[in-house]
Length: 295
Image (tube, rainbow, N blue to C red; front, side):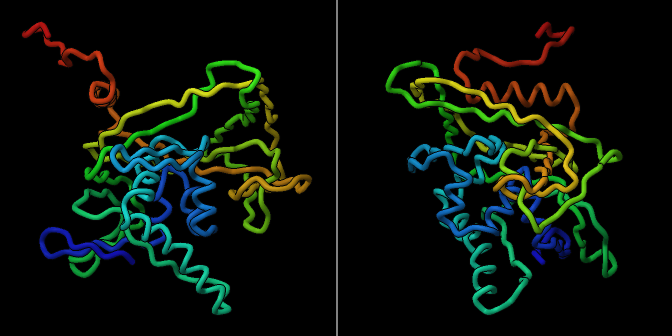
């Protein structure tokens, strides 16, 4: 259990696995990657490229990694504490296997230091002196360093460019009451399997957001090819990496949608406009319209 001191001499307890799955990325894929692979393989899975820039905290996420997870990836590259916290996850499994153990209870710590805000659901114990978390529903972001998200942009065609093949996997989202999935952890999904998505409870990004900028790397392509994977319901699904063929195992992905504020539409629009004003040139001013003040 993670133990946090809160106001009024009270204690907040959060299960390590709950914190790992909910706070280390918007999908459990990042947590699974950190627990499954050594650090060199983690970098190959989560980063499209690694080009260190300690001034801008440049991070280049893999194509399937959402921008909401870029701050975590940047912290694991540039913040020694975050990198140690991430490496410790696999190290515990590796040590347990060397000791002949089939399972281990992972100890997980937060991936950043300093004060933070967290939202949880759970139960009070010990005359309301201890709160046991059953579900983490929100977390603030560290404000220590802004970061830069860079994605490749293939905009020029040339004979010496790279051949670009895009595998288009339609994302089929199934409502929880209609969940038809049989899940296995003994097989990986087929390489050519379509991706089915299940929505986990939403996750609030408690303001303020850490400042960041976006950039693109212009690349030349020689030809473009799009391969579309036709979705089909398999008898069994797995959350692992797409490996091998002819196992008849589909791909299942759990997604916890990140949101700001209380999910009100006007508030969300305002927060998004404020974010764009901070990262995009061209904003002269940003104000609410008022019938009394006429702005």
